[in-house]
Image (cartoon, rainbow, N blue to C red; front, side, top):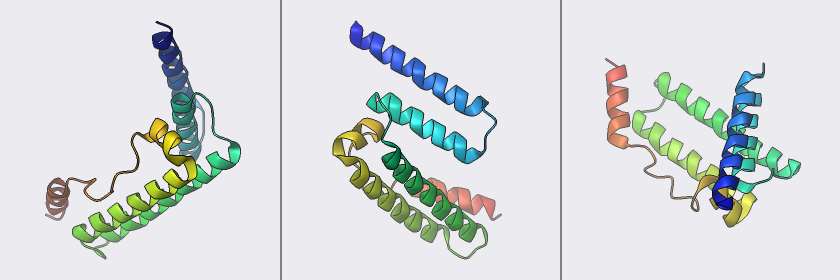
Length: 137
């Protein structure tokens, strides 16, 4: 029963942190950081050291910038949908490897699930390509 109560308290704390992050007048980055901090504290039971948290946030921020650039290239017709998928898979795989190296196996598993899978195939290729084809019509 104590385990269930502890999990319930952790979940309630997590929900309060997420609600607070969205209620506070802040920019998108501040909200993302608050959500990440809440996820980590919920998963580990404590926050990361500030240096580690900063490194993790930087990795994720770099991923968003790379994803944004990739999406812009796709929208402008500079790359094909197939290239977009391949490059996006590469970005995701690299990010997962960096986060795994930063956190180690146990903390990675507690926060994000099992060890980083091969990022290839994270997208349903057929669905993505159909969506892209319908947008070009």
